[in-house]
Image (tube, rainbow, N blue to C red):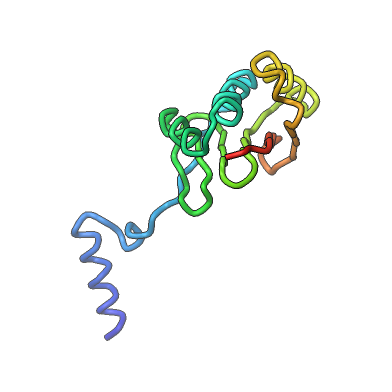
Amino acid sequence: MRLAATRSLLLAAVFWGGTAASAIPEAPRVGAVIGQTAIYAQLYAEICVETETQDAAQELMREEGMVEDPETGTFFHQHYDLSFNPSGKRCAMVFRSEEAPETVTAALSDALAAQVDERMTELQIDPRPGNDGLYILTSREVDW
């Protein structure tokens, strides 16, 4: 009897245009494109250095088309393999790169220094190997 009731519920869900799992919300997904380090540096400067409040940073990310995961506070770019988390005492950016760690770290440092050199002394750049490439964690303390 239970099997028949379960099957009826599943059939009703499909009939009404959904699936049994459609009621479960999905977390936002990050894009797949690996962009240029200079683009990431520009976004990081705008979001994590030049904004004065966390609300302003979040608004800027929404304007860029990023989608927030409400559970973690992380914003996911929908085109690039890139995410930001402006919550807490640090503003962090993570992106995937196919370059050597030294190359991408130097390129990111140089690009950021060209944009906001006087505020980059507290910047941390941490390359981390992952299953599908190199991930770069960039973060700095914020006062918001």
